[in-house]
Length: 130
Image (cartoon, rainbow, N blue to C red; front, side, top):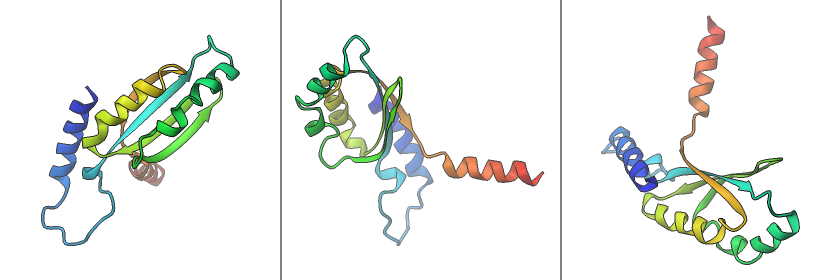
């Protein structure tokens, strides 16, 4: 499912990118997708149990090497909210890392994400100008 969504997003972004662009750009949206994981604490375990499970490989294996962490927040009462910058060809690898290293400690939710900050800023400026 994530691979399907990533392919749709990628094809949409590629169509919006100029073909004859001469300027090299670092990591265009056509080169990656943002994937947000909500890692909800397993409340049937106490903190000591969760910490022990995470030390069994989570910190060494998530995210996989070479995957950029856009943001990582701990939300009280919820867990961790992690957004990764993932090349589309590596989405499966990131998914496997979640399955193998996270599911013992957290319940997970996964969302394909995009940066809305500039759109929100623009909309706010328009609203304030009225």
